Amino acid sequence: KAGVTQTPRYLIKTRGQQVTLSCSPISGHRSVSWYQQTPGQGLQFLFEYFSETQRNKGNFPGRFSGRQFSNSRSEMNVSTLELGDSALYLCASSPSPGALYEQYFGPGTRLTVT
Amino acid sequence: GIQVEQSPPDLILQEGANSTLRCNFSDSVNNLQWFHQNPWGQLINLFYIPSGTKQNGRLSATTVATERYSLLYISSSQTTDSGVYFCAPSGNTGKLIFGQGTTLQVKP
Image (cartoon, rainbow over all chains, first blue to last red):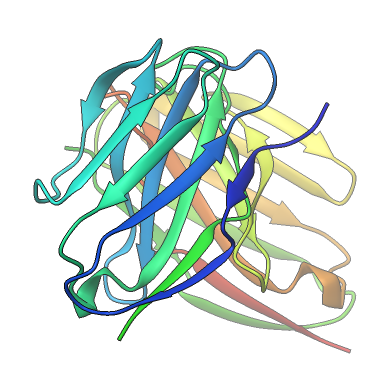
């Protein structure tokens, strides 16, 4: 089975721009969660999607949004980028929501905001 | 929410040595996973262990949910074991809560 894929792997953007990151879960998995990793804050939960619905949301501003498509692929969008948004963005897939099952992570997208 | 504390924060070992990493959590959990983050940033699943003991090769893990801690044992360490180890429990909120990690360096 193919693993979780994320695109793009690396991205450089300028302050004020917006960015869209993509995550394709393991085949058959319907839950996708997003996490942000920074040196200062560590790994923090952004949101979780299951069956095209956001089920859970972390403590991030409204500039961070996401969606899930009928094939379970998910995208997250960050608008009006700030320098502090520079981070590694990881997505995880799982058969069902709520972290009751093992979660599998993709390789991440490293975003640099200049 | 759940607070997670990992110790030690940093660990340096000679190849072949054994080590124990600890994860304390502040509340009851439904799930707990251990991950190894490689130098490229990917989180590799090590164990899904909400309770009990599991072994996989040179690695084993034990979670005592009633006492709110989990341990990861690495035996006969190798240089490829270097990296950051995270434990991540989840409770009723349904999201993984990551500790700050243990950075392991194994020297040849």
